[in-house]
Length: 164
Image (cartoon, rainbow, N blue to C red; front, top):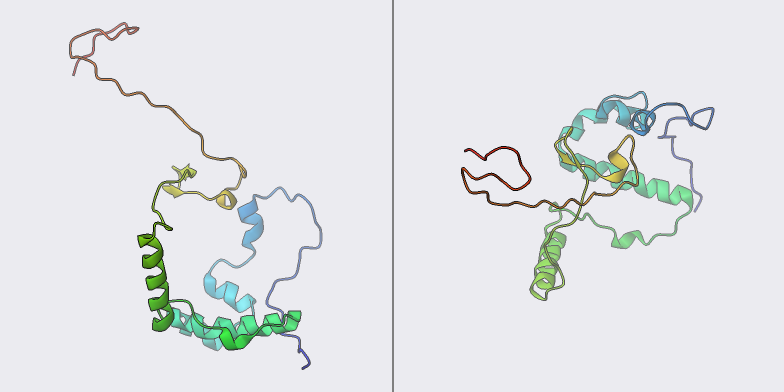
């Protein structure tokens, strides 16, 4: 079957390559500020934009667009086995819940802590690619020593008495 070319959904590449002096976040941003502007620039018909207020509309629209793009790229995919992997598909959702609970009972899935970089500016964890600068910088490890000091006694190495 002949693949027909889908309409371009990506903005034109910049004319020059190299350092522009902009931060990574600013360089990626493009001229669009709002989601509807990005979708409009990506080729989503204007009359459909308002339907995306409903999260399920995203599930109805974009899988077909992805299939068109994959066919255009020449990918050979067995589309008979494609399905939605959210709670919108209750059969798949039930399977994933069963699978997760079974693996947890067998000790294959564990909850725990992992190191991450925290941004005090944003008040949340900050992934490596979210930072305008400092990519590749991992979490720093600190050692904190907490000691009880008796009230009224001078702590060793201090010049003043501890008063509460």
